[in-house]
Image (tube, rainbow, N blue to C red):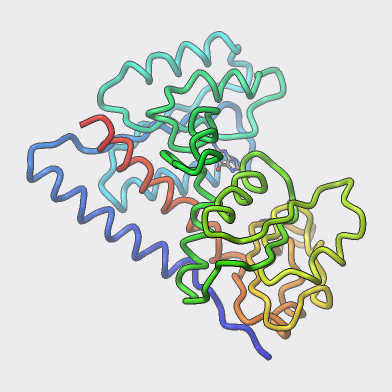
Length: 283
Ligand code: GUN
């Protein structure tokens, strides 16, 4: 078997087109143009690239982009004050603080300072709680993007065994909640998981989100499984690879996402879609 590719670039371009159309209609009706504030603290090179892509996504969809770049020695108090000002700003419907912040910043305080109605990352306990209660509002971008990709395969998701590799609150945990909404049976694996290969081998769907280059080996993939690779790792030679050994996994999977051009562009498309949704919540 050679897997079909789930083309995140193509799917995300379609989503962005649909967002741009809806925004055009909003503006014709005299409604506000959605606005997204992307806050970057410090100069982490990977974060700078992610933030640049998010701001570019705003341009492509006619979302008003407010760029706030703060120095790496910004205090916790200064950052929370900036967030509070954005909470009060009617031109800003979505607020995103790029993670990871510098180590002196309390990440949880940042998450909880953002108004839940502007929390386009879906990280606030209010939004994560709504997802856990199966009445989602603003949903974490990457897991929701993964669900959109899975839907394009046409495969019936109900009853599928899903192994999620990585238990982060940004991807692994909300991913399991999204899978439950589709009546899948998720297993979340982490550092202390016994026998990771066995957990992957029994999966109909594998979602790799551990941030470790090619951690998931091709031979672990069940014949015909769907493989979603959330990882983006840069090797010392500059090459970008995912958390899955792509070339080997491709020979066993029915569907697989590439890196780059897979989940990455979907995360941004959902961020923009969440910004539009937040603007609609504010109407
Ligand atoms: N850093 C890596 N992924 C994300 C994300 O989805 N949102 C934010 N705010 N920071 C990130």
